[in-house]
Length: 205
Ligand SMILES: [Zn+2]
Image (tube, rainbow, N blue to C red; front, side, top):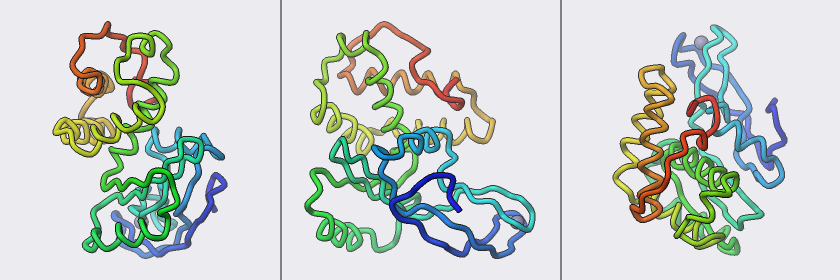
């Protein structure tokens, strides 16, 4: 059973990375975060689709692909935690099936979704930043975020730092530093007064 109401879920067979046993678990395959906003918090805390092995108790990320829908933003993202072999034909099929959606995106790395949520929350909760921001708002800002998430070379370092933070090799301060650089880049390199407290959540503190 899932700890939240998903739009779609699936019972799948997994292999425990620790004791190598097989087990079944239910994972979400479609979530609409405008209906279940706390799923955003789960994603930020890396708790979404975490599964536990009943044999040894080991917890691991399911690696199952899922749809992340934000109905209010008119955004549908097909999230593949790792790149599937046939991703070009998969993308085509999804575009045909859900072509009615205002914006369809494809993420092949959980870091992209993690950072998107952080950026959205950051701009939503920081009124000072909003008055200094030069990247517009609404759809225009969302497009700036998506372009950065999909093309900026800094994403590689962000992924490494985030992974390091999860495994305890890096600190929240390291993550804050690199997220700050990301923010400056997204804002076109304009020097902004630094505010460390904005990226909230246990990983970034
Ligand atoms: Zn196990």
